[in-house]
Amino acid sequence: MKTAVVLLPGLNRDRDMIAALTAITGQRPATVWQTETEVPDADLIVVPGGFSFGDYLRCGAIAARSPVMRAVAERAARGVPVLGVCNGFQILCEAGLLPGALMRNTSLNFVCREVKLEIANAQTRFTTAYEQGQVIRCPVAHHDGNYFADDETLERVEGNGQVVFRYAEGTNPNGAIRDIAGVVNEAGNVLGLMPHPENLVEPEHGGTDGRGIFESVLGIATAREAA
Image (tube, rainbow, N blue to C red; front, side, top):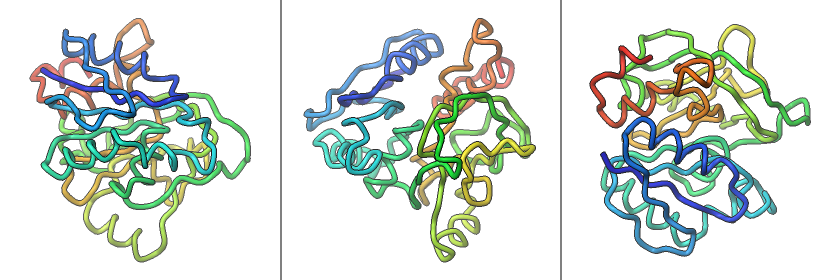
């Protein structure tokens, strides 16, 4: 089971993601620096969270134009699964791989706490380990997680079933429109979400609620038992 993690200046969740993927697959992921123009063959490419390029200009805007992201876009166009978490979600939106944008939290404050996520679409390749409507726990840590899209885009995304996760039970931490916490592209192979599933994949973390996302997309048969 091959995975790859993109490395960009300023990221701080790359080691968490590497540890999670190593624990789940039994194999350390390949790492790809931002200047690389090729990405190794992988069953999943992950753009982790952090503050790429110090969040200057806009969160993810500079990173989205780095050489490695052009290589990621090429892989995504060939159907390779790509997952962006937190800053990775922002980068995928800025790169045009996902619809919408992430704005500053409505509170204008950084939020770091646990939220509840509803599985809004359990039929995607990232969510088959879950039940439709299931509510899972997941931590968040961000300052710009307020998902927004214009009305036309929202209707298209909702109609296509591209909303995969919503903040549940009044736990929306950032004011995201329609409580949207994660979306996929139209082809269904690129997912972005603000919460950090990589921080809830082992019992020592206090639960394994996030593990199903990785096991779903990697086709690991034990997913349902472990979730």
